[in-house]
Amino acid sequence: MRIEARNLGWREIVRGVSVEIRKGETFGLVGPNGSGKSTLLRLLAGLMPRAAGEVWLDGAPLAQLSRRQIAQRLALVEQFADTGEALSVRDAVDLGRTPWLSPLSPFGPEDRQIVDRALAAVGMEGMAARAWATLSGGERQRVHIARALAQEPRVLILDEPTNHLDIHHQLALLGLVAALPVTVVMALHDLNQAMMCDRLGVMSDGRMVACGKPAEVLTPDNLARIFRVRAQPMIDPSDGSTLFRFLPMETST
Image 1 (spheres, rainbow, N blue to C red):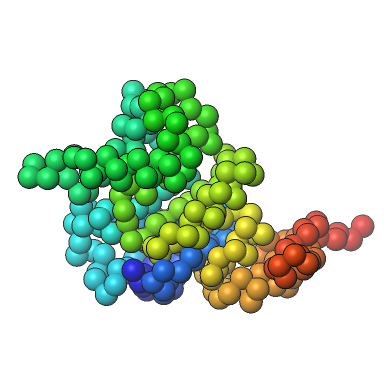
Image 2 (cartoon, helix red, strand yellow):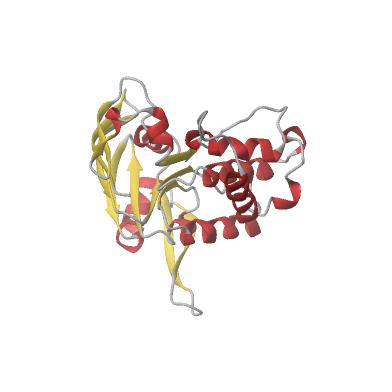
């Protein structure tokens, strides 16, 4: 599903952002803390009140779709998402099926299979009966992602999805996301992980100041100007990919 956004804004946090995200691509969003990444993701999901600008999903204006219609197309996993503590892991993931249920189409065997696949995708199938309150931060993050997968969206929006995850689960999650047959938009804190995306948008002071392939936008000059670090590109000899070593900016004495 293609996403088009024109002149998105909200207060002074996001200002005049326009971007087109192609069907099936993984689009990363990077920028310093406070640059507007999380707010932009919520704008793309249609969740910010009195927002400026417009969003289209495959040519359909987001503003003209009901919340149920949006939820059947798009799933958002926020950075500080929470869920009811009385729920089990399976109960929490079952909620992902809500947009597809109705009095004439209640939760059934097919929905259970979809939930089973979502739990397995994030490695939580063995913890389905666990109570939410007993989970670690990383386990909760994986459950939220499983719930989003159970929604069967065509657009998956993730706000720093690798937060709270150990390195094994970070890599597993990024591999899972890359293999999904959906359009993915995700904010990332780790710039080396961002190099795995198809394209990147770079946020600074509420604006998207660069957009393109990772190697085109994460240049040493841009990293010094936007992130205030010195970046030394290195080539991984095993596959030719580019990695960065980051150093603090030199200061005069």
